[in-house]
Image (cartoon, rainbow, N blue to C red):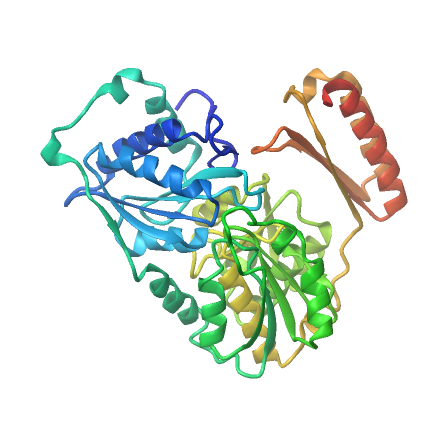
Length: 454
């Protein structure tokens, strides 16, 4: 399909709540467009769309508007309330829905919100499908259409939705007992605030729970996967076996070992890939990562006889590659890990359970499982920009990037891109000499600041 997405970013639609495009008026239009597109995919029975949300105050407003738009198109709505994003994707499939919609801005501050859409199989939408929805968003004659009153959809609240996902998550590790393990769990005052503690408790773990009092405004506020400092300190103070931090919508996880040291997504993926390779469970012996994953990932998988496939940044591109090529493990260094045998998107809870399962089977602490992993130094920076000008139209930026690449001389790499959800440009340099990386990063950022900085 021709055209480019204007409303959709790298992970759905996102922005400041009650400011375009995250207004109730827009949510109503999105609901109508999604219902129109997806009701055609269901061949029998009345189509249904399941809606979940995280704990943001604006979720109530957007949920109501989104629901109204869907119902006005003759499609039923199932409301499941606050659930993690991966749980919503699972419910879209397990409850035989035409689609699923999650209201969340993931790791963003509470004033933001977003709309993530899943198809009936629980997968995030392709670029082409998002373009189809945008096409209807922009058709005024479409939004003026109305169906007969007797054909309007019905909304139903599913009271046991969270219990269904709890059972599914425990089954993913065959209900393995976690008795004897002390876990510090930070749920970021977010969507996993109820489900995550219940799962670990029901499996028998001793839990210390952090940031589990959502008030609609404190989601991600100096807590969760982006702020693991309190988690790490609490693990050490309480002699816990592991620390687990979710982000606001529960699709991203950062863990820390028993010594209070952070373990990012790259190390988690290598840990899991090594275990799966050893048990002949890693399909095609391949791990899928993005360009932002550290070069040590390729080296470690190579030592084990495995392979790494890299895709552009964004967990949905990882998922697309996994589905297209038949792989079952992938993710991002930020902690979006996809265990394709169980889930269709990044899932902080399932990933955590998989790591705990390895610890128990290997009878090793996290520090022992990752002791051999030595990432290359990285420098990651970002700047606010006034416009997302094509990089090829900035000669000075192109020149300093080329000079940096030449100076790294094959022993490092540079990446820079615009954020899909914020007015920012992100820069990453990787190599053996961190001081050199810092110096080169400053030169590049200065050039970017001069050209497009705020």
